[in-house]
Length: 347
Image (cartoon, rainbow, N blue to C red):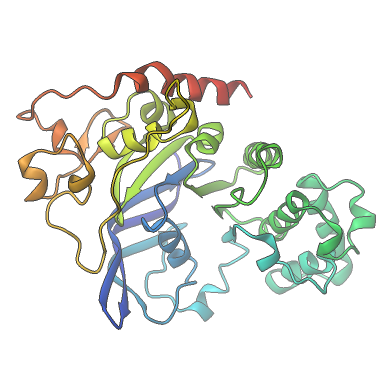
C-alpha cells in the first residue's frame, strides 16, 4: 500500500474577527500519498491557501483549528505551535509561495540563502552546505550555478527567482511540498517550464506535492488527483481523468466552463453567475445552491454527503442521489474538457 504523507481528518479552521467567526475551512477529509501531485482548485477565498498554511502553522493569531486532526508523515501535529513546527519545516514539509520576492531576501545572494536553510535544518559544515546549495541550484535548472550562487535576487528573472525559491524549499529533502499559486504571477511560457520542473522533481526525488491554483489549465498539466474546493469544503475529488472527463458537481462544471477553451464562437466566456457566500454565516444546505441552475429543493435545506462515483471519484451533490432527476452536464464540456487534458498531457 502506498505510504500516506499527509492526512486531514474532519478538519475545520475558523477566524475570530470583529464581525464574528469566519468558517474558512469546513470538515475537510483529505490525504496525500507518497510521490503524488494533488492539485487543489477553486475560486479565490474558497479556503485553499488557508488549509495549506494551517498545516505549516503559518496562520495569524486569530485563527484556530475548530475540529479535526493533521497527520504529517505519521505524526499528529494538530496541536503543534509554530516554534515546534519549525523543526519539521524544511526536513519534512516546505512551501513555495506565489511571489518569490516575498520569500527571497533582496540583499543576500541566493546561494547563501539556500546554504543558511541547510545549516539551520541539518548538521553540516558551511562547505558541505555550499556544495549542497550548488547542487540544488543545478537540480532546479539554474545554469552556471557556481557563478550564480553569489548573485542577489534582482539579477534573476521572475521564473529563475521561483526556481531559487524551489531550491530553498527542497534543500533539506522534505517529503511534502506545498506550492501555493507558485506559477500564477509568471507568463505562460515560464509557467510551463516551472510545471515541467515540478514533474521532473517528483520523478527524480519522489517528493509529494500539493499544488494550489485557480487555473484548471495549469492543473491539467501536472495533476495525479484534483480536489475542488468551494466555500471552505471539498465538493469533488478524483483523479485528473475523473475531473476532466467525468465531472459530476455543477460547480466543477462551472469552473471548467469558465476557461477560454470553452468560449463561445463570438469569444464570450461563461462565468459562474453570482458570488460565493459569506463564511461568517454559511447558508444551510449546499453552499453552491444559490448559484446552481440545477439546484434541487433539498439543496437549500440539507448539505449533501460525499457520493461515491467510483473507487477514486467522489462528489458532494444531491444530483447523484438515486432519487434525483437525471441531469446532463453542459454538452460543450463533453466535447472539450477531455481534449484539454489530452493536450496538456501531450505538452
